[in-house]
Image 1 (tube, rainbow, N blue to C red):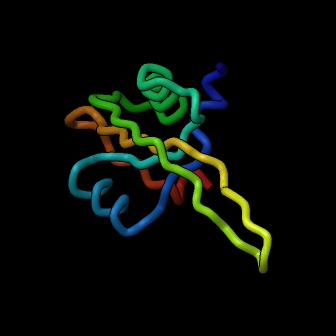
Image 2 (image 1 turned 90 degrees about the vertical axis):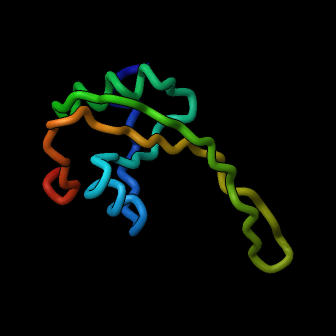
Length: 96
């Protein structure tokens, strides 16, 4: 897997913003097959910061209905990346 394929998008929610400001932790949607090592290498290469810890969670796709037809959204993986002490916090507005 290439480094450019690992990080899909940042997750910008109220909780993730509090984690980013208070605990220096980024919340990202990543490729479902990416490992913690892949995620750490991708963040260090693309965002130019040092990574202290990576935690991941598999999110299950929700059941969605359209009238009588039902389907599932795909499963996805969320990563919580804590930056090393002393690293500058990333503003995702700068990346867009």
